[in-house]
Image 1 (cartoon, rainbow, N blue to C red):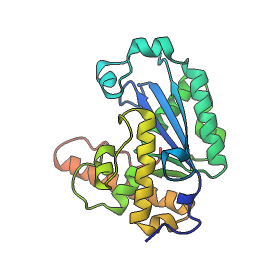
Image 2 (image 1 turned 120 degrees about the horizontal axis):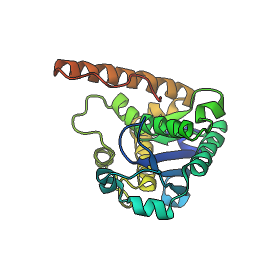
Image 3 (image 1 turned 180 degrees about the horizontal axis):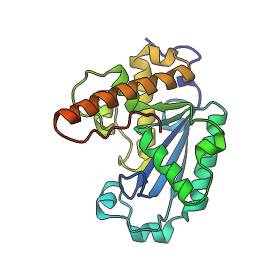
Image 4 (image 1 turned 45 degrees about the horizontal axis):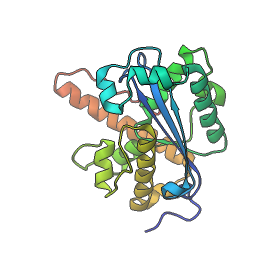
Length: 238
């Protein structure tokens, strides 16, 4: 079955991804950001904006191995964080203000780290600029967990691409490549699950909150059963 006529899937989407110095949303810094404005399937319908940022700290070797950006390269070629982050936040706010959904894979990480970075540089956060919660948001990972919850195996972006029979154009963990791949996944999900494309964005945003909370509670219960600290945040997207 095809996606519903006049669905959000047929209207503009804004894909979003960051690459960082590490995995701590409180302490790590953004190294690259990509925003991809998509008006339909295919790379020819995408407008890509990317930022390389000098994070002001050393980029650890493990992070360099993930995204391929060295401290020296970022210092030599990167923008200062404040103007770059201000541009990114402004573009996101402009899109959301026009009801263009923000799309990512595990968006909680990207939103938390950019909001913390904006505060670090004494800039208004995205939520501050909007005057309300960050919405509408579409998270391909949360959707995958919510609509295909009993599927076994990993749910990394690579694994989800393979599940939907998709290939990426370039090196994953490069922000713009990850965004384009995520947009492909979202469109595949809308084809596989017609109710997704038929939902209003506001309803889908709320449904993702429920799906994520259910996943986090179940995952925390699993961690407790293994004697580990339950650390999955039940709140989404922040």
